[in-house]
Image (spheres, rainbow, N blue to C red):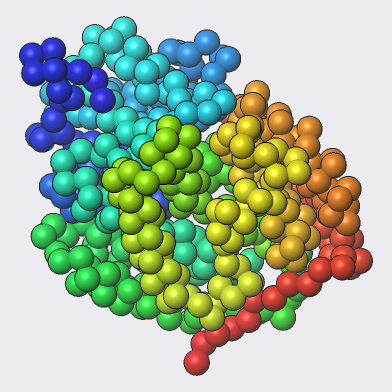
Length: 430
């Protein structure tokens, strides 16, 4: 966060509304609920549209990646709302180390706010360097609720993508998904709820959502190729920035399994512990605290995903250590950092999972996407020539239909000859 000149501390969020960028609406909504659980008024940024790009591009040079433009543009849409008050507003923008320009988003947003006379609006910016440990007062409760919220949204998104391609009435699954996210918000946002009670209520809400997904009329006898979707986290999770690529893959006959948000949490936890070891603190209190946090977070995630055990059999995400091990021959995590390593490792996992292709979604000029595009031909050749394709986005209108249609046909052809098998979804209704 910025520095309060009088106290030397970061400005408080008390009395301000904290706006959360839409890195998927469902994840952002659940995350905002976690802030509300500790008394911080938080709300999701507005949906992205043409005005978003107009405002974002007005204050960028064109060399920044699309998520930077979209995030800034949506913050500026809030600024131009009637009744906007700088003294009652804050923006959430975490940061990270590594080759990605994401680490420069928060400083640049602060610069733009200063340039337009809004330097009193703080940008709340926890860092991946310490595993996002500096997340305001009541950080332990906030971080636990946030992890639960994101894990729940990940599980529900998996159910959405597992069910929607097979629904017999268009729109049924989206409606169930929207209701389910609202149910998670209601559980997470309540302040003062004991930890175990909140988890019990969350499991109950997710169980009700699971039963609603089961009740969606669907024909699972229609076999579809399964496409793993990896890439830059904002672009792959935000339909506006990827021109609805997942829906288009579904329209052309595929089913998608999308890399989840919490994957990044496990990666930053692993990187935090690696830094502690490298600095000679292998047996320090900081390492013990990092390991305890990681253990509790994994335990919470397991309880959440256990609700969907039958439905998501065959869709389980691998441990982060497995993803990093898969990437070692191509982009060793000891040298390469960030999403390029995760994307390549996850692509190889998808091969072993029995997927029929991998799509990598990235912003135009994204270093992570450029590197993975260079590596994928070798990865594909080493893995039975499974189709792998990068899609890059810069916010301009493009016709993806031809390329998506071709990719789905390649996936179908691979499905017919591949050596690996997968578990096809079925109706798990009792």
